[in-house]
Length: 532
Image (cartoon, rainbow, N blue to C red; front, top):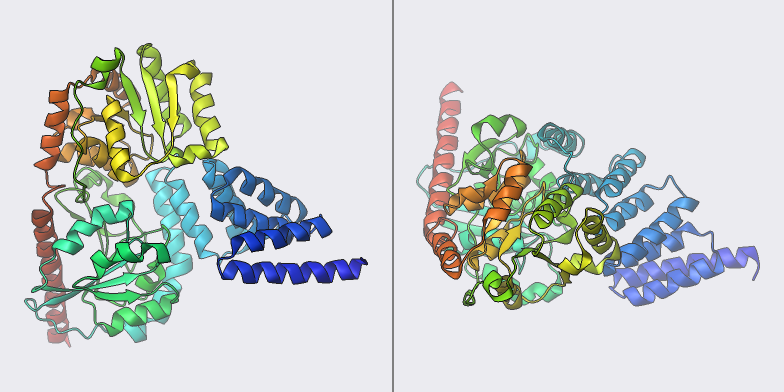
């Protein structure tokens, strides 16, 4: 085959691979990419395609290898850098992932997904200060939102809504997670408990994987459903404006399915970020951020662009029917204490390993159980397990399990005495799951919202004694807690009596807040009318 023929064949195969991928035929696409690199081993696009396929399959080590091969051949390609960031994130390499996204943005400043991912990934880094987090969000607003805001002032600026403070309100929720997802466990109870006589609901779904169709039906009932998955920001905003939404709530933030550019166009007079992914948006167009007194105390308000509105708890918790708490307690059955972390393995940082190893070394007969599909990635498993071994913890004391269905996941807590939370980013729904099974969660209170969620949950149910403010206190608290079955049943009881499980009461508070904010807007309109 001549060089010209080789190039032409590779172009044909690359086009064929792209066509296969667009139809979800990833195995066929992978075959084409492998043929490309076999014909032309220096064709970077072939390696990049293989990296993308590996990312989609969740094969982090292979994705990193192929992304690095593509970058060796073509180092200044923004798309290659972005894929490298995705691959590094799968294996839990936060530093490399953030560096890759920053480089992708330097090469292509208009890559909004790289900016979203950089902001999200920075939340996992222990060195991200509240000031740095706000600066990144303001950069996002300046680059990707304010140009939209300024250009749309004429189109969306006049919200011709009837300024009647008591009328039925149109509430719009925007999310990529109207399905079986941890975020839906936080906002779902509110949507399902709304008073439909007072509030007409519109659900704007930005991600609709076919396999979640049955799961979405519970949200679609008694609500106006809008599929915005393939709509651009302008189209999304126009749909919302055409529905004459009074109050619009962002539930995705910087996670998959983000629609923050549509919010930048200000299609609704009142816009709020809440529940699904709460970390602040930095946006001029976002009016309010719903939090609570623990996640954002008054002294922390300076780190958020939005006006803080406080709820009874950071979110409500949609729970399943809980299995029985097994008796006797694990430490009574085993003769040693079992610590565990049953959440996402990519949240485990070096700071986490430092604290965990101190607990395990001070309690030499104890064990540690880790459970997450993240550990299927050799890089993640190696970082966590070898990190503990390197800090003096014997390998025989560490058990690694993979994800199961929800019922089995809850049952796994019956083999655990104490959950050790991650540092800096804490658990959320995973913390609630542990408390549902009566397992105490020891957490370290940080500065940013993602570092204070477990602290908020524990405080809400009357277990603030489990919330440490220093690493030393975290270690001592973990060592001191040895819950009996009666203790565990009490934790479950406290959760059951808290605002997290009072879905009706929590939703009434939300509705009263919506009404109060709406009345403020109506009052502002009347003042404008008088001034005119």
